[in-house]
Image 1 (tube, rainbow, N blue to C red):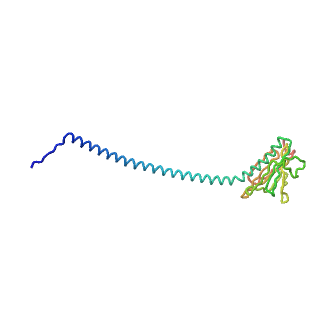
Image 2 (image 1 turned 45 degrees about the horizontal axis):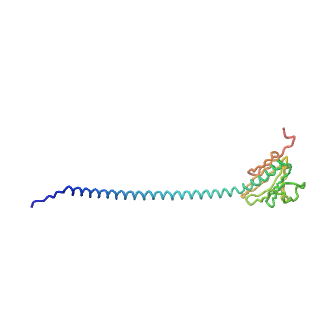
Image 3 (image 1 turned 180 degrees about the vertical axis):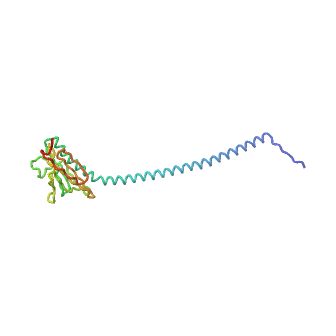
Amino acid sequence: MMPTCTALTHSEFYMRNCVNAKMRKCANGLTHSVFYSSTHWRIRGFTLTELIVVVLLVSLFVLLAMMNLSGLLTRSTFRAQAHEFVSAMQSAVSAAAESDRRYGVIINIAEQSYTLREITSPELYGTPEEEEIILTNELGDKCRISYVQFDDWTGTDEDIFRVHFVAGHSGWQYGGKIVLLDEDERPYSVVVNRISRIVTLEDGDVELLAPKTKDEVLF
């Protein structure tokens, strides 16, 4: 028997090419879809990981900042109270310099408090009337008054609980220092300068300079 050979017509050949082209297109589309989906999920997963890391780092920085701020506020409690006291002293001498009135800061070591008042009566050490009080404040455990020493070398002892710094138009009646202690018992000195009228807060228990007499001043 002789083998038969079947020839494809032109239309059948065209149809077969179309079918093959569609199959190749579908295969390419499927491959692209799988590749894009895999890459897409890989990119999304990488971005989520980055986000988690960033959130953790930000949370850590916020926690450290809060701890440092808390420590700073604790350390600055003494400074805040000490500067309020210095401000009260400076207010007394500044107000007296701008007027003809006298102002005094009464320091009560026993009660760990101080009062700024205008002195309207000749009696300096009497009980001030309520309308004379400008400011009163109490210190705490983080800022305590240890002792007071004037620049004429008189100071407080166990029997003296109240001392006065009085300022008039010409300046302080007496200079001196008020020694404060922080919560760790470290000393700081509030120095009242009789000549310059300046009140400063200095580290340590500073040594007072004796005031010079007129004969010792060269000008």
